[in-house]
Length: 377
Ligand SMILES: Cc1ncc(COP(=O)(O)O)c(C=O)c1O
Image (cartoon, rainbow, N blue to C red; front, side, top):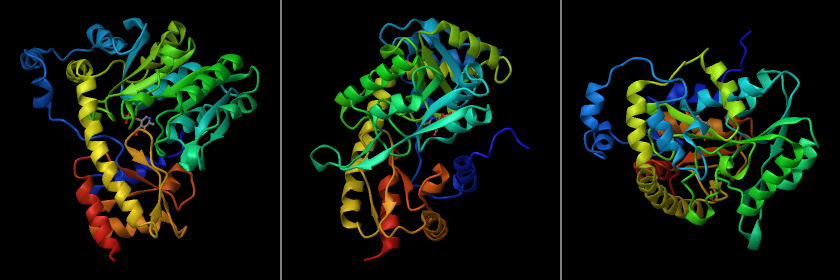
């Protein structure tokens, strides 16, 4: 028997991602060619061509860690630990921190590794459920109630609280007050708060951007990656950021048993991207904003087909089929007949009438048109 259950979402993507013409459910934003990245800084093409392809430092090249640390208030480069994608960082952190029997609170639904890795390590998983609510002034929102946290985490005994904000797949984001309440509850429970921040910088309203948990909480560990806001998933460069040196030291022990270090060319290119992060993310926010305007029109016109709670941040949303039918049946028919791919909610262990839609790609308008044509009058 395998240690992990198969990663349902990754298996679904493996089946369709490289054959479907229109990925209307991707979570990563539009990518950039290497040439364009190298053009952002003088001399970088020569640096890449002259790079020697030896091992790199386990925690990441010092210059890359310095560039990353500059994005966090009060964090030194020692507080940054580079990984091969966010995925490796989640695995390493959980293996470093968790033991059989530990209680772990995790938001639900969630990106599967955030719950499956603690589960497979023998932890007691306590789900913290999102609810779709009317919200303030009747404006619907996906809501994760901070005040449920004390009941879920108890007082002492919870090792880790896992929050993904902005959230995949709902596009939810706590308000600043809610985030502060979450931090206060984590502090009271004596728990480490791990925030998967891979969709940060993609807030619809820039004022809504939360501080990173590594800035807001002394026992906070933040996760980020260049895959989503920067569209650079192929680099496989992500990182943990935290002021807890002991946690990062424990992660180093685990890292020696998997990737050992990141890829040297990826680190070099990532450094350019990190120094230009705000510009790259701003470009992707532009694509997202344009696509969201189209989606708003679509959901208004097509309420008989599907309804959504508009996302607050990120590059995905989680609508549901209005007739409550199974979104997998729809997704399989749709991709076979039009090449448009949607992601059924069942891959989040959620009500199967829900599905994920993604809007970070330039060809989203075309994908949406194909879907609308297929739906007919
Ligand atoms: C919430 C969340 N965390 C982590 C990851 C993993 O990111 P990466 O594929 O860059 O390792 C993803 C990817 O979809 C994600 O949505």
